[in-house]
Length: 432
Image (tube, rainbow, N blue to C red; front, side):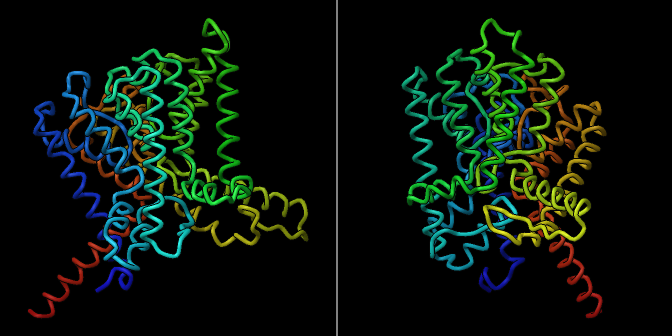
């Protein structure tokens, strides 16, 4: 049976492909001898491919260079999607390839921008590779060694956050590199189809894109707000602005790089940073989180409902990218947000049962499901997940995978497995 003829089959292929690649990615990590158990290596691999960036290691600088490069490479491959790579390289998937991409890509609306899905995937990877190569070259130009430059370019464009240094990007004390990473973290948070349209000369799409405008507004408000709160915490306003811009880009892009421990910041700054955990990047990007487009849809719908209360006879429509009549997408977005927070709640409970305090368990759940990496409390930016019980690590692996696959893909896979098991049992009962 072809993939395009069986919707469930597409979800099975996507989920099993991600599970397989995470298991395979854990093998070299476990064999390097720096991980105490295969579960720890698997956690690191899942965190890498899902671009979460949470680690069980306390000293990454003791790792051989090839191990650190592999850890960061998992971000890069997982960033744009294993299936997108497979579709680009395996045209034999044919029409079913687009269904596979839809099953693993982010956002409430998914579309291809060329007539052939293989061309779509190839163009995405060309853009992705070009931006990665450019960042690596820029980092090398400002003093990074070849391995450090490539590894951090992998982590930045994949919005993952693994680093070759224990103190992350802050260990280099290189303001130019921080600005380069800040810019590319934000670029990686933008829908990659917009880059294709930009290359094609369709500049107006950038201006009309509702999600991109909202994303820029959120980043701008966060940077200005936190900078204002921290204006007296640094010797110069320029240093404050750079540090805040870097951390805002790191959190909203769900990269998780660090140049400063935000747990030492003022409470108001921490609250503003925490709000970014609920947002994430744009749909169609390598970033995680709920995605800006969903909050844009809900906020526009809320505005329309308020206007209807004031003007009962008025006619109000939901406009996205300048197009009216998009009300049908509201239930889809609303149900996703509900399922998202149900998973966050369950993950919080698991963390609490594993011994974490309520604040750490909650923010860690936001981090794992949103593929952010660092959290607050006992799992802040300078901490690691090595001390967690095996059961919590295993659940976090599931949560990271669910977040990367937009939750529904994994839920449908689990429900389909349960249904097939029940059908199998019913068949055996009938035979008996």
